[in-house]
Length: 199
Image (tube, rainbow, N blue to C red):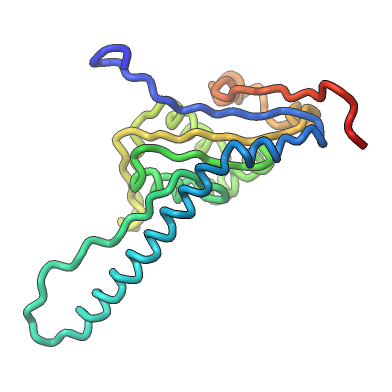
């Protein structure tokens, strides 16, 4: 917090860039292991809570006495990582996890190439605009004709981490990405081999 009317979000989008064989993915997995372990533990807790919730709801559906109390709240899954997800699913998960998410994509080409898939076959520019606003932690609100798909978050916290190779990186971003602010929101970390490979 810089001052009461100015807060800076801690969103970071980082890309490790290196040739094949410089052990990008190994470093990546070591870095993420504590978060993966915590996600796994949280998911087990959620599954147990969901089983209890379902048991209560099943009993309620069979109760004919007419003396039912308020139903319990459905358990919310606390998570920190997302991998293969649509932009709509990310919005829903963020609304349930206000402390933020890390979008982990092993190959950046997969993320960039699939943005149009995440936007239901439309242009990827809408998804990129959404990611730009997410970087700045702006509110995220969607309104759909299907009310169950409406989402609302007062502030979004989404970081992205991925890897790619130098030659592949050259073709991933367009001039429009640079001008719109999508490209400048990524931090690129160059990974170089300091000595010949073991083999």
